[in-house]
Amino acid sequence: MVTYPATLAVSRQTVLFVSGLLRAERRRRGTRRGSRALTCFRQAVLVLRWFADATRVDALARDHKISIATAYRYLHEGIDVLADAAPDLHQVLTRSRTEGISHLILDGTLVETDRVAACTEAGHDEWYSGKHARHGGNIQLVCAPDGFPLWTSQVSPGRTHDLAAARELALPALYASRLPTLADKGYIGAGIGVHTPIRNPPGTQVLSVDNRARNRIINALRAVAERGIALLKTRWKALQHVTLDPWRIGAIVRAALVLTQFEHGRRY
Image (tube, rainbow, N blue to C red; front, side):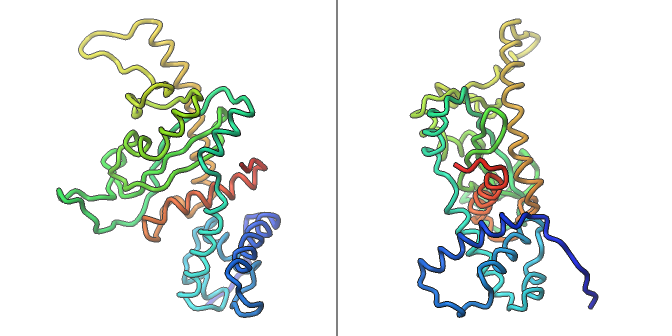
């Protein structure tokens, strides 16, 4: 076996932040001092190595001299304490109104996962997205006007349409907030307050000049939501392909959201 030096591309402040959350959780559980195989700091390093580099759990267990089962338990514990620190959608909308944000952006993304044998009663593959032609979980995001991610949803199976997922997880709160929300054509029919581009008419007809201009404006303003998705997926490699239980994707993305907001000094 060959060993080599490595540097974790995460600031010490971020490690201390995660360590503080883990320490608070241990106090809540009444964990006795010295009864864990890893300190809070070392557990935080384990969790952040998985998020930042998608390090295999067996490698994490070997490097930290713990069993694979313990490594999984520590990893899931870290995911949960971070996810619990994620902002609630109502909290985000209240602060957005207080700060006078002009509008929000609603978008969806697919977080890839391993193929899973889960089918609907009709025999359809639950986690397969026909739109993306791969397996994964559907996550809804609400972003600020500059594209920075403010909130992420629970996971829906990959075959779930963006509009269906949004109706269940995001739209009721957005309606109540009365904040203008921009979205792509996948959200046409979302309801009052959600502004989407107008579809091209059938046949040889074309949109009017005013409608074409409206579409350009909406597309230009909402396109920055891709920045929010990229901030999460490129910074935290674990989100590029999740190998844990796909139902954990929602918690994993919320945990990554908390880490991203902390690193950028924009926690809600």
